[in-house]
Length: 435
Image (cartoon, rainbow, N blue to C red; front, side, top):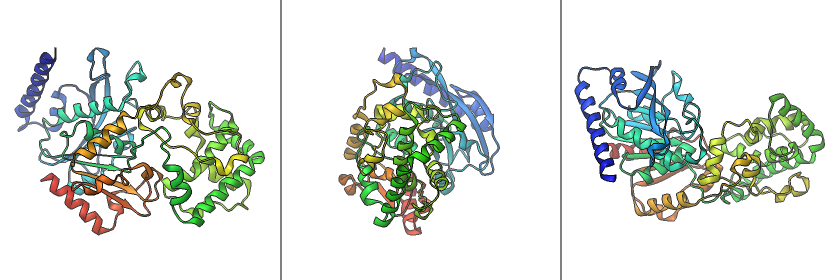
């Protein structure tokens, strides 16, 4: 069976090459896409920045190791510059709707005048298998999706390839290189954590003792404490807000209030919100509540959250962060926060899920044994950087794996956020790998 499968695969690739080469000289990209195997639903989009742009769908195996499980349609957005240019595969970790905008342009595409293929993550938005069997929502399966896209489009885009993604998409870029190291020539994961547990343990001390200045951390702590002290007056207003939004929760509203307070500093630092926007403890109830729900929206913990696929993966293999409740214990309605993702963020049907460290170990082992062209980008005040790769000592000896951390950068940190000297250094490295 394995030999027969290899024969079919080789035949499939040869057929793709024949199709591409036979129409290369006299066909437009649109015609080429219509003739490519596994591609359907080709629709041209408007773009202010690319010669041609399309939304297309590719047929993917629900279980790449067992095609009998069926297939689903995965949404791609293709931004075309030229067949002789590098191609960037954006390994999106969530939805790809943003790439439909006329003004969308990936940072690396702008820097290197490259094509872009944005790959929406399986089980999100327009890329959900039907029926939705959650057993097949695994990182490995998502990487086979990317591999299929890569192998298909390499038949028309023959130049160098870059993979890149942000946050969960950055994680995907990192994992993709570990599983399929030869698919791309360069990887650029932005603000990508490499968590080693469901509640990793590195985020709480980062928020409590390391990020910002002592006075900034004190101001945040005082805000949280004051909000909890006023729970008798604030929880009814909080409930009223949630009812108006038609949010429902898996635990009592008082506990959701507590979780929003615990989440608040993580959200503030993650997005680089100026600390002087955090209200003083003497502020009115309405001011405190408005700040709380602005930066720590309760929908994050609701049954209506659109991030259920991510929550499933976090519990299963991506990992996440915990909360330090010690400073607030006497003011909280909840008794403990440990394992809150199972209680608060997942339906009961997922209660059996346990974190598997295999992905973390495989990725770290790959980074230790190899030295491919990878540029890691982090923000120094972003809590996700606490579980990034910056503290992995063996990476400091690598020539090609490079980690750049912008001291006051948030989760929004990009190459363009750095001083010119570091930008130039990053661009030089990528340029060399693209030659």
